[in-house]
Length: 123
Image (cartoon, rainbow, N blue to C red; front, side, top):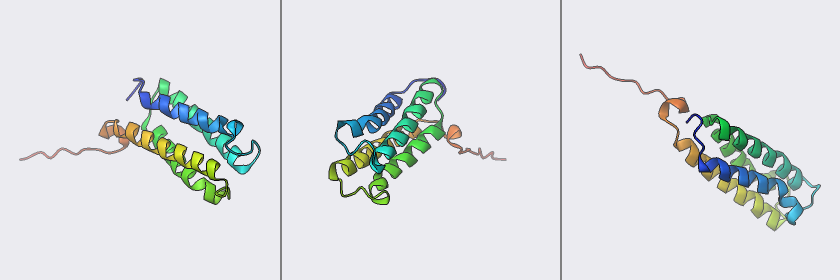
């Protein structure tokens, strides 16, 4: 998509920012596994979205989708599923991030998604 700024990048950036600051607003301890997960992946999403505002690439959306899946399963893998609000926060952000990234990736032309369309020539 080149340098065209899309609204999805701003949504992704907002989701990353929320994930990063949510431990300070009562969504878990500011030092636990959930908080560290939020800080790390929030920062990654913010950086990817910031970069995509300047030069958008489809691989950034694939990484955001993978992070969305991780955020959904992280409460169970990192053992904070007993913290109901924190778990739902991670899962909600993960679902939203995955959905927005999927939508943004679908807007790329086929050739930039790594797919090549072969033309059949009749003789």
